[in-house]
Length: 262
Image (cartoon, rainbow, N blue to C red; front, side, top):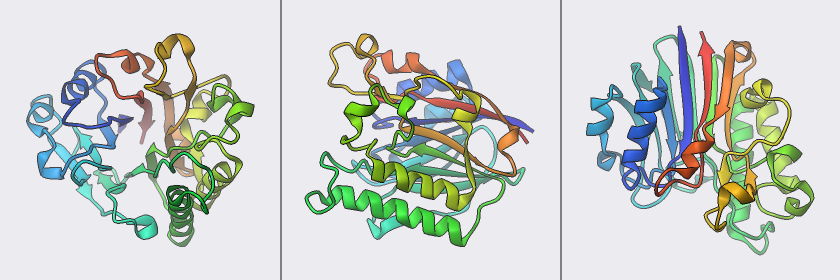
């Protein structure tokens, strides 16, 4: 079975319902994982998505903040969620396809502006969240699994517009990159996107603060697709749909795609 998966921090699924529908119509991924839905599950506007063929959903939500959802044309089984770092946030949900593949959808905390847990509680929460992820995957080694989402870390030098300038900026600090690597190692995860696109600058997020985000191109690769070692070689055709960042009233993130032959 071959299926295409996309991950997208939508920054409010209700506000950007039509952008989700546009993506589903024009790109037609089999599975779409959304983060920062900012909606209780029962308020997610499913009617239009169902009409487009995406009648399956596994989601966790809360009013106004966070929220993760997996929309699918393929049947899904809800296989739970974890409250990492005990934040009480809707930041993780997992679903299983009929072929036995488990999909983990994550929205890792952004971490605030100051990369110092003593001065900034949010940064400490981010590190604790990643530590809990590491420990969970170490204790329960995943198999035949895909992990996607806005992980809010750009790990490589070519995942940011200027490595040296961003070393002290939250999302690219050495301690975050170290925690990111620890999570990957603990679960035996492989970076599908960089396996397919190994060289060159690659971004999935551009700040709203830039007057012309496209011309400035000061991006970061915060959105990721991983696979466990047993299925990493089944992944291909990775891409970032950069054009979506330029749609009307867009999210500041662009969707990231990968196809799996399983």
